Amino acid sequence: MLLVKNGRVIDPVTKTDAVRDLLLDGDKISEVAPPGKISAEQRAEVFDATGLIVAPGFIDLHAHLREPGQESSETIETGTRAAARGGFTAVCCMPNTKPVHDSASITRFILDKAKNASTRVWPIGAASLGSKGEAIAEIAAMKQAGIVAVSDDGKPIATAKLARQVMDYCNSLDIPVIEHAEDVSLAAGAVMREGVRSTRLGLPGMPAVAESVCVARDVQLAELTGARLHIAHLSAKASLDQVRWAKSRGLRVTCEVTPHHFTLIDEDVTYDSRFKMNPPLASREDREALLAGLADGAVDAIATDHAPHEAALKDVEFDRAPFGILGFETALGLALEQLVHSGRLNLMRMIELFTTGPARILGLERRLAQGQPADLTIFSTDHEWTYRINDSLSKSRNSPFDGRKFKGGPVATIVAGRTTFQAS
Ligand SMILES: [Zn+2]
Ligand SMILES: [Zn+2]
Image (cartoon, rainbow, N blue to C red):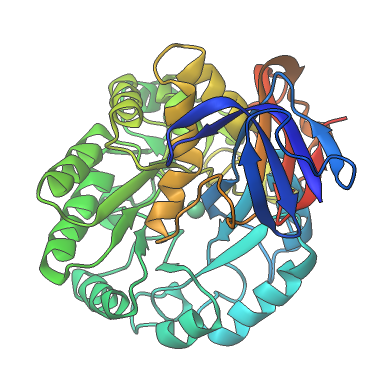
């Protein structure tokens, strides 16, 4: 048993924001009470959370753990250790592994590897075989084996016809379809966002509509099929307008935004490949729209799109480098900096974007109450620290945030009653 004492408990579902003690028994929460009211003290180990925030466990809907097949960039073990240090208790891993996760045998492989991981691992299966966009993957068998959603992430579901078929199928299985929204004809050859900055750098640019026309296609298909559609790493104002329209019509359409898209913009891009991700860093106006959506509820979740690449792949010229950056260990620091300390969001709303928001998309409910899973994220809002890439628990080093100073971050991560990260 573990008694988490005197923390400021913030739970977006019950709208709790009060100092409470929490008793964890095995993998469940067994009691939540005002300080000093839980009498298990002699029997339980005590974690003193005085001055800290105690939240439901953070869930990352979007990450690349690279296993199987790219273990030189990350493994399930190293990736989840980095995730736990970032405060995450559950990580959804994308299927663009080698081979692509498009069958139940790979679902089982991932879940087996994840048995002793530092977070829960919830695999996402491919929508199409090999994510090639031709034939639908073995979705029912993968669902049976444990996937929580499907996606062809890395690229969009290739055609409207296939997207419709996948949505129909996933609707009957009651799992969400997660779309990497990109019109590949508009995005072909691009390495950053199209605009003044791409012209100045002489790099091929991808226009914002490359994302939003795909979102428009999928929103209409979601209306036709009634499916649960989730837009991954939404970066453009025009895409968010589509999501707002879908929500106003009562469609089951949701979206996530990454910390790098609400922090950085295209003007920050240099020839350094650590600024290369897909979708690329967007315009100042797009970023303002994302911040507004994070505040007013149009955005449902913060997801990292943690995308490790070993140095041999990433440390090359900008146009040759693969897309993607690390995300787990800087997510909370960036959210506190950009959303909370800036006064744009209150802590309750930020926590919702990391916890109940993503849980709802997966059809789960997460709150701090008796009988719920003992998954907790305990963090500080004021301790000052510097992100040092060489101390990262990830196997890779591709982050543009090396050396950034943060105010507040994870202090302890508890997964099913087990402490998988504790700040020293
Ligand atoms: Zn993607
Ligand atoms: Zn991704």
